[in-house]
Amino acid sequence: MTKTVTIAHGNGGEENNELIKNIFYKHFENEILAKSEDAAVIEDGKLAFTTDSFTVSPLFFPGGDIGKLAVCGTCNDLAMMGAKPKYMTCSVIIEEGFSTRDLEKIVKSMKKELEINGAIVVSGDTKVVPKGSVDKLFINTAGIGKIEQKGITASGLKEGMSILVSRDVGAHGATIFAAREGIALESSLETDCASLYPQVKALMDAGINIIALRDATRGGVAAVLNEWAKSSDVCIEVEEESIPVQEEVKGICEMLGFEAVSLANEGTFVLTVAKEDEEKALEVLQKTHITSAIIATVTKQYEGKVILNSSWGTKRFLDLPTGELLPRIC
Image 1 (cartoon, one colour):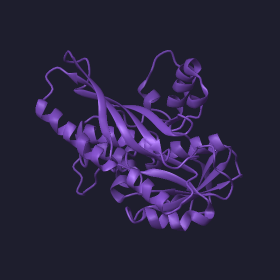
Image 2 (spheres, rainbow, N blue to C red):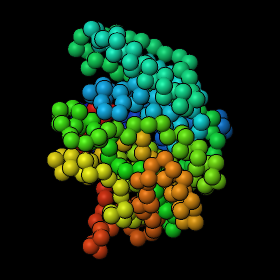
Image 3 (tube, one colour):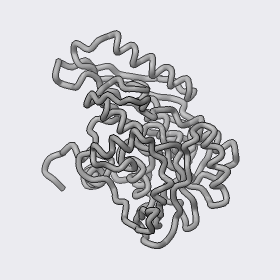
Image 4 (cartoon, one colour):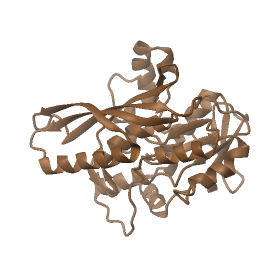
C-alpha cells in the first residue's frame, strides 16, 4: 500500500480495490458491506441502497453531462440489484463563479433522467466553495430502490452459465477522452450514458432468471468479470471476437494503448444467466441495442481468473485494469 493516494487508486481496478480493502473495509467491516455489490440489500431484502459521487471532466460531453451521469449512475446501481429506483438525494459542491445557466442545464438533465426511472429527489445539500477548491462542480447522490427480483449476486455464478453484455463497450471512456483532449472525430461517437432500469425490467418481465448484473463503469467489463470470477470462485472464458466494440472506440483505444474492455461505460451492463436462458435474454436486450451479445461462458478451468480466447486459438488472462486509466470519467 502506497503512502499517498494516486490517480490510479480511482481507476476501478487493482489499485482501487486495494485502497478500499486496506482502509475502508478494514474499519467499516460488516456483513452487508462485505458483499461488495453495486447497492446494499437492506430491510430483509426489500430495499436496495447506494451512494455515488460524480466529478467528470468536461462537465458537458457528446450525449450527456454530469447531471445525466449522476442520476443514471445512481439509479443504475439500484437496477443492478433488481430494484426499481424510487428516491434520491442530491448534494452539490459548486465552485465560486460557476455559471447559473450551466447549473440549470445540468439540473434539467437530472430531472429528465429521473422521470425515465420514475424516481424523485427527496433531499439535498448545496455548498459553494472558493475558486480553485473544486473543479467547477461535484455532485454526490444516494438512492433507494424497491427490490423486484431477489437473489441477484456476484457470488452466484456456476459452471455452464452464460455471460452477455447489453451493448457495445467502451463508448463512454472513449467519448470523454476525445472531448477532453479536443479530438475532432469524423463520427457520431457519444457516451453510452443511459438509465438501465427499463432494460432490466424487460428482462424480469420476460421471466429471465437473472443470476448476476453489474454496470461496467470504472474498470469496464474487465473489472466486472474479474470481480465475478473471484466472488464465485469460477473461471470466466471470454470469446474475444464476440465482444462488441464500435470502430471509433477501437481507434481511440489504439491511440491510448488501452483495451475497450477496460474502458468505462455508463449505460452498459454485464448479465449472467443459465445457458438455457441466453437466447431469450439476448432477444430482449437486442430490442434496445442490436449490438448486445453473448461474450463468455463460466467454467472451472482457472478458478478466480478471466481468460480471453482469441480467434487464433490462443488464450491469455484478462486481469483487473492497473495504473492510471482515464481520470475523471465519472
